[in-house]
Length: 412
Image (cartoon, rainbow, N blue to C red):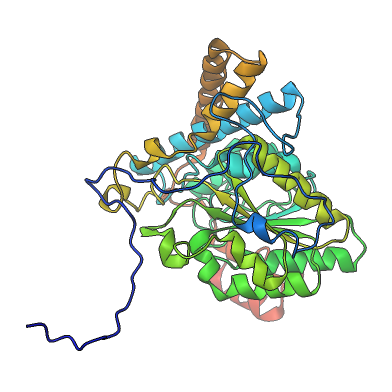
C-alpha cells in the first residue's frame, strides 16, 4: 500500500521532452506561418501589443522567400554583408573553440546557431548606439569591425590584451565601439543598459541602448529591477531575451518557459513585447528596426524574445550530450540562420553556392591570419604578459596616495 496521504500535494518539476538517447521532440508546437504576423504602428500602446508576446514574427520561409509586412526590403549588398559577417563570426568561433581544446586559453563560449541575433541587430542599430551584451554577442563587435586580432589578444590574455589580463576570456569591452564590458554575473547588464539609456535621455542625447540576456537570466532580480525602471521612466532601450532553449544544462522550462513565453514578462510591466524567430535574419532586423524607432521617438522600451536554439555547448566546460539528444540541433524546426539567409540570397539571384564556398573560405582564412599573428604575441599562461605595475593603471583618473604608496612598495 502507498504511504502517500489522499489528495497529498505534489511538487511539479519541469522536464524537457527528450533526453540523451531519445528522439528530438518538437511536436505540438504552434508556429505562425512566415508573413502571417501583422506589423503594428510604432506608437501602438503596450496593451494593444499584448498578443505579440504569444506569437512569433517570421519573414523568411524555408524556401528563402521573404513574406509579409515585417519584410525589411534590405538592399542585396546589405544582405550579403550580413551573411558574410555571420560566416566570419562562425569561423572565429570555430577557431577559438579549437584553441581552447589545444590549451591556448582557459575558456570559450560560442554563439553557434545564434549568429543572426547579434549580427542582424547590430546592423539595424546605429553604429554609436550603446550595447550591453551577454557573452554570446561577439557578432556585435565583428559587425562593427572591431579587429579580430584584438578579440584574440583578449581571449589569450597576452601582452596586447586590451583588458590587460583583468577579464575572463570572451568578456570583451570597447568604449569606442559602444560595447560595454561583458559581465560573467548574468542579468547585471539590464539595469546598466536601462541606466545608460535614461542618462542619454536626461542629457538630451540621441543614442539608444540595447541589452541581451539569456532566458534563464530572466529569473534574476536584476532583470526585474531593470524592467521596472525601464517602464516607469520610458527608457530608450531594447531588452533582448535570447531564448536558446537551454540555460547551461537546465532547459528553458526551469526559468518559466513551460508556462508562458519569455516575451510575456513584458506584459506585467506595461512594456510592449515582441517575439521573433531568432534564426531569421530578416525578422530580427525588422523587429530591431521597429523597437529602435520606438525608442528614438521617446515611446519607451521594448522587450524582444529571440526564439532560437543553442546548437553548440554552453561553453567549453559543458557537454550537451549529457542532457539533450545528440541530434536535437539538426532537428530544430526553424533551421540554421546562415543557411536560411544564404537561401534567401540565392532565391533573389544575388548569391550562389560557389560564392558561398568562396565566402566561407575567405572567412576561415581571415580568422586564420589573425590567429597566427595573435599567437605570435602569446597565449594564456605565458610568463610576463602583464607587468605587476599594470594592476594600478586604469583604476582612477588620478591615482590616490595609498595606491601610489603600494605601487612604490611593490617596486612597480
